[in-house]
Image (tube, rainbow, N blue to C red):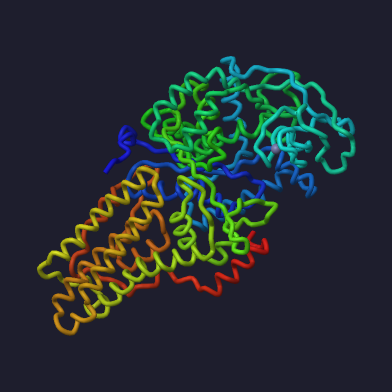
Amino acid sequence: MSTDTSAKRFTRTLVTSALPYANGYIHLGHIAGAYLPADIYVRFKRMRGERVLYVGGSDEFGVAITITALKENIPPQAVIDRYHTANADAFARLGISYDIYGRTSWPLHADTTQAFFRKLHAAGAIPAQEMELWYSPQLDKFLPDRYVKGTCPKCGYADANGDECEACGAQYSARDLVSPRSNIPGDASSPELRASRHWFLDLPQFAEKLAAWLETHPEWRANVRGIAGGWVGDLRPRCITRDLDWGVPIPLDDPDAAGKRIYVWFDAPIGYVTNTRQWGLDRHGDPDAWVPWWKDAETRLIHFIGKDNVPFHAVIFPSMLMGQGDYILPDQVVANEYLNVFNRRTGQSEKGSKSKGNMISVDWALGHFSADSLRYYLCAVAPESKDADFDWDDFMNRYNGELCDVVGNFVHRSLTMTVKNFDEKVPEAGEFEADDVAMLDAIGEHAEGVAESLENFRFRQGIERVVDLGRKANVYFDARQPWVTRKTDLPRTGTTLHVCCQVVKALCGLMAPFLPDGAKTLAGTLGVPLPGGGPDGGPDAWAEIITRLPAGHPLAPPQVLFPKLDKDRIAELAELHEKGLAK
Ligand SMILES: [Zn+2]
């Protein structure tokens, strides 16, 4: 087995998930991309007793938010409060176990961002430059990106933004936009081009360093290496300020800086640092507790993101970190492809989009399904190397057929029979025969196999290996027929169920990173602790997966861990989803 040995150099792991934009509700596509894999990984690391910190939060600046505020006639703060609160709640209900879920609107974040800016500026990495931008004569203000709409110069899409096209992904300068029109309600004037002075992150300065650094990471997924390599081969200075009043102020004593703000894509990844600072204050009351997590070479920084975020996390943010001089760089950038939606009417896979209304919000989904059922399916079909679909029939079939029928069923019949026939205790084992030994050996093999999958960020493979242990256990159970031997040979039945109880205990530990609710319920039935470390580390509970429950250990009557999904109910909900109501 090949294990990612690079992890051995580190004594601390800092995990981040992309900050969702506080202008909409998170949906299942987001979860499959940047959140569930990170959470599984973090839970696994905690079980191992390693020191791990998991940082997330809301990304709360940018024009999309101020446009929502304008359209609803409310302040931007009300927009971000609404989505921050709802998304933090949805993550918590789904069991995404952040150590902190912060906000880029915190004053502390302006402080962190300005420190980044100043350092880069002092080093000559943020030069100013005049540029032509669209301007509204009626409102007497500039119209940055989404404040101006027009026709894409590349593909002709009529609703393109001022600097990029959502339809074809093209990026262009403002003057190339065709037929510009103001996107601010009530502004009827025709936009005109005017000069404005802005600040640019001089990415070409970092080209050589970035290329050399990317060379040191051949182990990264092909999608990340491909996209990052493409960017590094064609770096241009990138404008990091906008004519806006919603964002972090530019920390320069310069008349042109007044009335402008640092732009959202510069400050958003710095939110990881801010939120680590806030975590240190909350937890330790120590303004410097964050420092080793970002500046000590023994910290392993891992970003979990969706594919669209690769340039920011594998090129731009690393340049900003390099420019600070004393920060670590990410050691892994784990990017998933997209989770699309399978349309049952057309039989086609389609991209999730707001305008199509085909996305399933986490809040809606949790109103109808358990967190474990969603986590199981989204992990089983995770878009790790290519796009995957959320498909209602597949969801039901895989959850019912694999988790319920294989794992849940084995656990339930083993415990039911043990509790009933052996006085609610783990039975004594007689002499083990070859298949008993093989079954017990399989526990260690699977514990190692699942760990190997997770260390290498292969979450689909990890959950498959958990189910596979359940499959082997069912084969063993069926071959041993304890329901038959119960009447003829009670000691042999005891040995069989003794072995089964060990597998159940192992399944409890193995499923814990993936299916925390089921694992917790099962741990209660078994009367075993489910210890987990955290930022301070702890005992290695993963190593305990192979230790056995002694004969005589008391058990509680089992509960159904994974209730089955009903076919008619799935059909009803799929229909609501098709009507655009799963939001
Ligand atoms: Zn276009």
